[in-house]
Every structure is written in C-alpha cells, then in structure tokens.
Length: 313
Image (cartoon, rainbow, N blue to C red; front, side):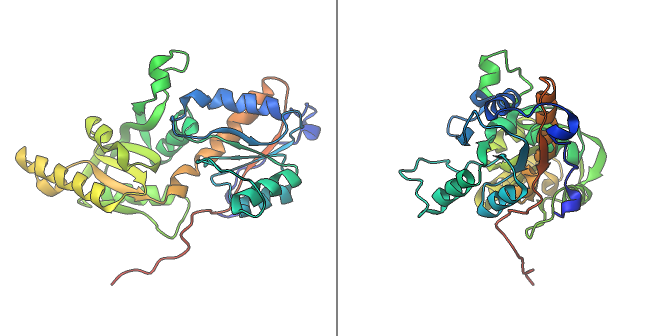
C-alpha cells in the first residue's frame, strides 16, 4: 500500500483552532466507538501503554503493533498508536527491553507514544472491521453473521453489533468475478486471493468476516450465504465444508460441484486493513463533537508476514 493510498490526514488542532484532547479523552471516545464489553472473552483490548493525562495531537492507526509500525509512529511524532491486533494477547511476566515485545513497549514510552488496542470489539462494531469489508465487496441489506453476546444481553449495544456480516450482493455475479472484485478491493499481498467452488457459479448473497474465520462455518451455512469471504482458511475445515456442501447439493438433486457456500480466502492483514479508514474518520468526529481535534492517519505499511510467493507448476 503506497502512501498515496492513505487518506488525507485531519488538520492539526493548531490548524483547526480547537483543543488537543488528553489521552483519557481519546480513550473514552475509542471505547464509545468500540465498547470493551463487546470484545470476545479471550481478547485483550484497551489502553496498553501511556499516561492518561498526556496530550494527544497525532494518532496513527495500524493493523499490527510491530516494530516497523512503532518506528513509523514515533518518526511521525504520533502521541498515540491505535492497532487492531493486541501486543499482549497472552500474559507475560516481563516487559524488559531484552524481550522483543518489551522492546516495543520501551520504544513507545521513550518516544512519548501511547498504545491502544481495538480488536474483536472493533470487529463487531457498526462501521467496524466487518462493515468496512462488507462495503468494499458490495454487500447490502446486511446483518451480523453472529450477534455479539453483549448485544444480546444488553440492549444498550444493540443487535446490529456482532461478528461478521451477511447480506445480498448489489447484483448477481459469478464466483470468479466476485473473487476478482475482492482482490481489487483489498491491499495487495503475496498470498493474493484464493477461492473454492465452480468459477462460473452465480452468487447473489455473501458473508464476510475479517481475520480468521473458519470457526464460523456453521453460522455461514445457517445464514444460507452463497459465498464466504474470510482469512486463514485451513485445509481440513475448508475441505470438509466444501465436501458437505457438495454432498448436500447432490442429495437435493442439484449440481454437486455448485454446492454452497463457496469460499474466498484472503490474507488476514488485508481483510482488516480497510477498517482503519473508518476508524480515523469516526474518532475525529467523536472528538469534534466535544470541541476536540487530532491529526490522524492510517499507516500504509504492509504488515502481512508473507513476503513472496512461488507459483506451483
């Protein structure tokens, strides 16, 4: 992703004549957009490092809290780095700079940059990861693939909040053309886009889930989606899903190889990156409502871990 693909940054507080918020105020705004109680129980979201009383003028958004992104944030002069993936998903006993994650923390604190994480709470949110991906691939009349537990238990969060999205495509298309649409919409990665199913089969409904999604096959089948876009599809779950779909299609007297749902597999990073643009816009708007302003931008660094591909013969 080139720097020209990144959205234009918002004006700085000094340029706009508004007040720069404290970190605590920015965190409050982020928590309003992506409430921590809507994160999955295993997740680790929220403020990781930083002084709540410190002023925040520049915010960088990225998918991964890797060293290259931290360096970019500090070189730009960011006061806050917001990432989708947690730095500490599992507990640690030390953040000494002699460990690679500890060194990230020390680099952030020495550089005066806080770190905040919005992960599965951003997956589930309106205009979150799922909605951003659904918008890009053209899904309309959509609903969550699986309503979040917090949304079901507490009406405060609403039933429009949940993992994934499923709905209707603006117009029918073939599986191959739909896969090409996905490839054109997402950041380029070494993996590219893989799909499973008859390339000429017509699809009219689709489900999407940014990040690892083969744990939601039952929900996709229950939603009766023609095609499912997600990431990190493993051999056995994908093979079994397709075998079951083709078996049931034959049993119903339809063309076996056209059994749905079909699969479109993307790079994990690529399926989540589009949300960052929404996050920049929505955080700026939330702060502006309180007379506060920041300068925010999306990191253009590709942090997908795969760097090359050799086509098989």
